[in-house]
Length: 168
Image 1 (cartoon, rainbow, N blue to C red):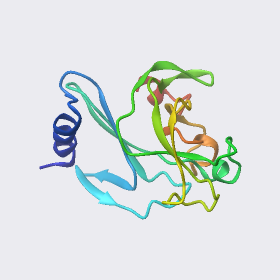
Image 2: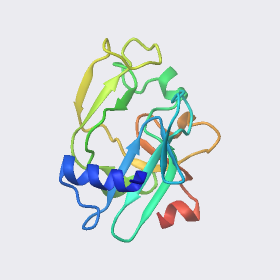
Image 3: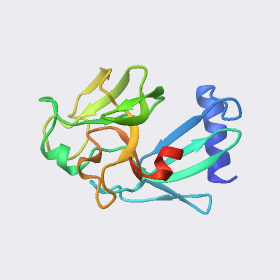
Image 4: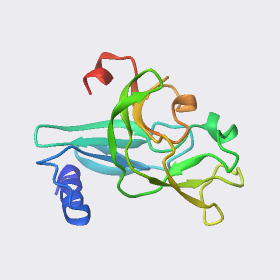
């Protein structure tokens, strides 16, 4: 089975999501998909090293991106409890505006783990929080490092003002 076939099957069997009937988006932490195969990486902080996959009946598109916050926000959390990282699970998005441009915005509560001790790692000592945190799916503000592109959002490594991101 190819990586895409595995993801389609997983979405349907585990979550009841049918990519032939609706758009299903995967954010795979520490996994790159190349030549329709999974490649695991070390998932270093501030790197574009995750896969963001869009699956529907009409499309199979894979992008590099991140499901982790950038170093800027790890060092300077927006929340006193620490910077949040989306936990594995189903996230629901709807069309909306992120800052000043079109994006997919959080539609239902999500679970975040916050780096409460600010050691740049997410582990058992860090607390889980569930709620509406403006965890959106959007384009990047730069493509060198994640940096300020993510404070916890899912980000595709396409500049948010680029033609390719607007088409996406």
